[in-house]
Structure formats: structure tokens, C-alpha cells
Length: 425
Ligand code: HOZ
Image 1 (cartoon, rainbow, N blue to C red):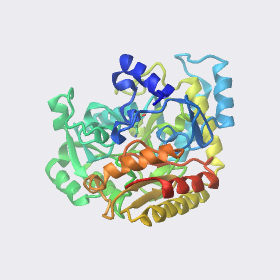
Image 2 (image 1 turned 180 degrees about the vertical axis):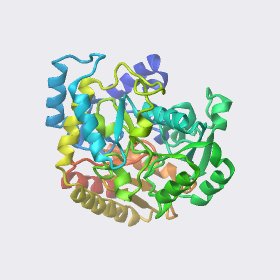
Image 3 (image 1 turned 30 degrees about the vertical axis):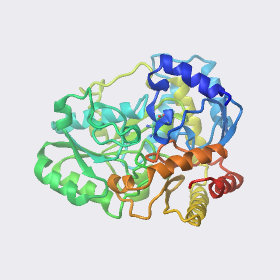
Image 4 (image 1 turned 120 degrees about the horizontal axis):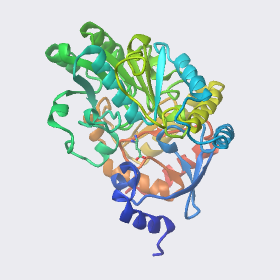
């Protein structure tokens, strides 16, 4: 069989880059395939270096809610680039984007821009530790908050995809400070508060878990966390890297009516360029240097290109009809589930707003253990078959499908058709 350009590039990449990729999940090991190398993206589609065009439900793992190369975003980035790519000094768009972000989230008075979700989560935890004078953090099994030491224990996303067991390279003391509870299990959280409440700096949670596939919070879960944090003087950090400006404009915290002490953001606020941010109440945020004594810095933070892309993205999103997109995604997910079930497969398609995940199971999906009981070998076959039929899905059962405002009814119909045809036996 002829070697494709993607295969050639992957072979060459593997000589120079560990595993041939710059982030593990995209290597597609979780589904037993080689990665496709992408030449371009437009709207809801990507085109590979071999000239194949696919409907894209990865969307760079979430930021492209406006699809690839949206004209407003491209115009803003191009104009910014013409004026220089980095100053290492403040620029006007930083102020505008900060105001836009602060106004979108009810409990947020101030925000600090960084370069990735990992950096944002790591910095938010440092701030929570400084504010409380405590060290421990509680995270949920299967949730992913980037790759900082404190968050790698039982993490979702690539850690789950590659079944990486512990966290080699993470000091034992750091591991000891990370407490773990199953997602949606308030009882387990309560037990940990009973034992460690006075040492607990923060609880960090994905308000909708999106790094173990899409798992929804049960009624009362997020509010229960808020109440427990209040009773122990622990800060609640809501990680909206995936859900911010996607679950709705003001994020999942607005949708579920829970105000955190600190919010972690990424993806969409950079419109596809590398950005993260963390924000919250002024009394906490003013502890950050140079206003306060908690050090955190970055030459590329508030980068003019990234700020321009984020600002253009949020301005367009503000005019978008989120409810209409959610209704369309819901109908699409229902049809997808029906088509796959009609083939005799156990299947559930979880969905919320413009996110969805196909799980090959009939069982409940409340936490990572239940997610793991879904048939991941079947997901791998489904992924490969769909890709052959022009549909680009997350190359792991522990990730979430993303839809953009650019996805059309024709895209959905083509996806359903591919699902009804793919060979899964
Ligand atoms: N952590 C990303 C998904 N939640 C995957 C990033 C990548 O491999 O590109």
C-alpha cells in the first residue's frame, strides 16, 4: 500500500519529537491509528496534507467555537501581526479582553492572562494556597486540569488515554497533597473534608467533566461543593478551560448557578491562539504580583496576537444564538444514538450545549469508573471507520466531541450517514 504524506511526516516527526507529536492524545494511540497531518482548516472542515477533507468535531480540542479561520478572527490576527508579534509590555487589547472576560463571569472582579490552561490552573492553585495558608487540593478522578504536578494524579484526557499509572517525576510530597474523589460523589467529598478540611486550600472541578468523555454534573453536585468549601474556608476553583464561553457565554458556572472563588479559563478566549487565564474576586486576585506577593509571570502573557484573536472571537460569540446551536446539537446527538442503537450496539450519547460524546455502554455515566466500563475497543473501531468516511472525531474515548457555529445540517446528515454505514462488527 502506498505511504501517505501523513505517514511520511509522522515517521520523520518520530525521529525528532517524542512520540512524533507535541501533545500525546493527537498521536491517536488510544484508537490504534496514526495521526493525520493537517494542511488547513475552514469552517467545520479540516483538510489533510494528503488532500482529504473531513468534518471536524475536534476543533483544536474546543477553542474553535466559530470554526476554523473565521473571517473576523483572521482579520484581527492579521492586523495585529502587521503591528508586531510581541512587545513584552502592555497593549490595549489586553485591557479590552480582560474587561470582556470579567463581565462574562458573575463572581469575577479581575483576571490574569497566561499562555495555557495548564499555566492557569497551576497559578490558581498557587494563589489558593497563598490565600488559605494551606497545601492540600482535592481533585476528581478522571478530571484534567493540565499537566502541572499537583493535577496529574488519576487525571483524564491523555493520562487516561495512555493509561499512564502514577506520575513519574512528581515529588512524593506533591502527590500526598492531592486528594482524590469520584466525580459526582458528594459523600466521598464530605468524608475528605471531615479528615482534611482544615488543610484543604482548594477543590478544583470541571463543572462539566469533559476529559473523560462528557460526563454531566448531577443535580446538587456543584452547589454541594460550594457549600462544603464555604464551611471549611476552602477555595472553590472551577476549571472552565473547555466549558468557558461554550456551555454558555458565561460558562458552566452561569448555567448551573454556582459562583467559584477562582475560575480557570483557556481555549476559546484565545480564539485558537495559545491563551489561558485565571480570575476571581479582587480580594484574592490582588495577592498576585505586582499588586501582591504571589509571584506569577510570563513574557508572552497578554500577547497582542492572542489578545486580538480572543477579543474578535468573544465579540462574534456575543451575537451568536447558543440556544439554537444547543437544540441542533441535541437533535443530532439523538439521531446519532438512534442510528447506532439500531445496529444492536449498546450506546449512549451524552451531550450538553455544543459538546457530545459517544459511549458504547448501556450503563450509567456518572464518574470515571463508569466511563471506563464502556467499550473502548469498539470506540476505536468507530473512530477509524468514521475517519475513513470523512469524519474527524476525538482519537480517544476519554475526550469530548466539539461542535461549532459553522457546523451545518449537511455536516450532521453526513455524520449520521457515516455512522449508519461504518463497519463495527
Ligand atoms: N488535553 C487535550 C484534550 N483535552 C489534548 C491536547 C492534544 O493532544 O492536542
